[in-house]
Length: 186
Image (tube, rainbow, N blue to C red; front, side, top):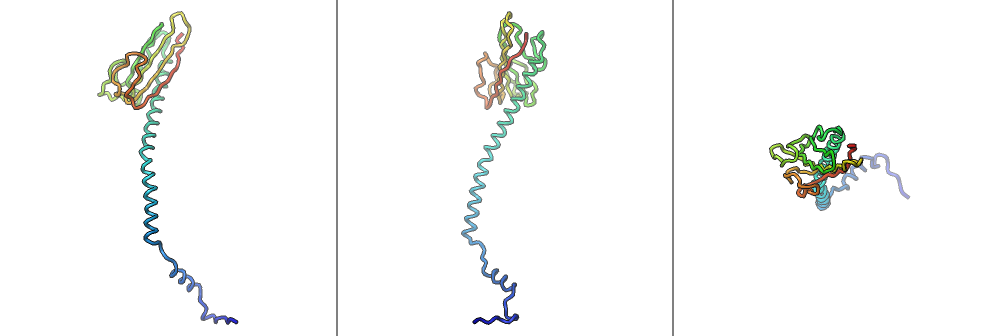
């Protein structure tokens, strides 16, 4: 038979809190070292992926800019009156009868011409993009569309000289964007 302790001898709540505090222990040095090692390995993996993300972002920006420049060049070609053989903004030669015209335009990152068309690039003007536009006009008696091949490459100074023919593709470029379209010049 157990007898109950009188209220003055019973342990109170603060006694139990003190007992828990005395029995609780902190982390050992081994546990802390392991936790820091795991955190360091995770951080190294994340920092290793950072340059890949930055390169991917830079490539995306360059491709988006090249696509915008291609849209601007095509809009310039489409806005050219059928009576004119030269586009208004970029000064591209458009063949009126059968034949092929190859135009090279050196562009800044803002889409402005950096050098005269169909000449070697001038490094002083700091061109960023090289646009090579090939136009194939139909025969004089045919009522078909004018075929346009547009290749934009960067950096522009990777291939400084204009192309010799329509198959002269920029081989030293870090990136290229190619588009094909047609013009109704009839």
